[in-house]
Length: 191
Image 1 (cartoon, helix red, strand yellow):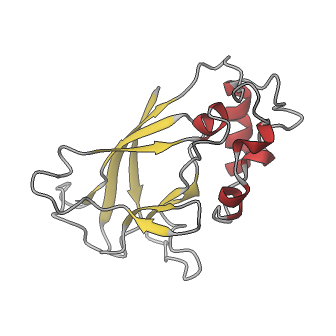
Image 2 (cartoon, helix red, strand yellow):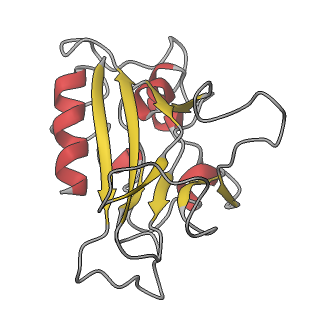
Image 3 (tube, helix red, strand yellow):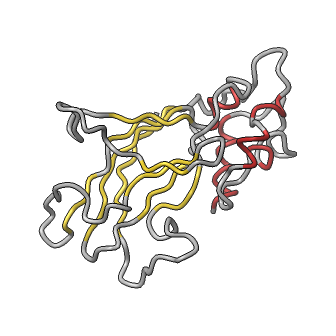
């Protein structure tokens, strides 16, 4: 796997778009890896470097989109003993979507920035992924076109490319596309 420390810091010129409040920090996307483990994001005062208690903006933080189109803000349960210090989150990525033949579907997610000056959001993610040369096959007997359900594809946020636009293509064919080629297709689709 690969690890990434994310620092989502609103720039001086960032004004949240009324049409897309997720665009200024970490916009909508699916991870193309198999599984992402991440710690709960914490907000930091950029002048002192100290962690802030709670969220400076109740609307800020990690959001996911369900297969049926529901929008959910990820929050810790109010249970005693549950905290940012002892909780890990996991998200399904598109490689698991392919390898399960569509039984699992990737989790579209985004980070909405705090509408408060001098605040950053810190998190740590570990991306678990296939080997670079592993062929991205669905299970035997499964049509690779079914790796993304029509319902899930229909509910993707507008900036998230469908799996069909990157898997089963000329440069990433169903029968020979390996994880390295799938990664290249995925990164090119977002950037």
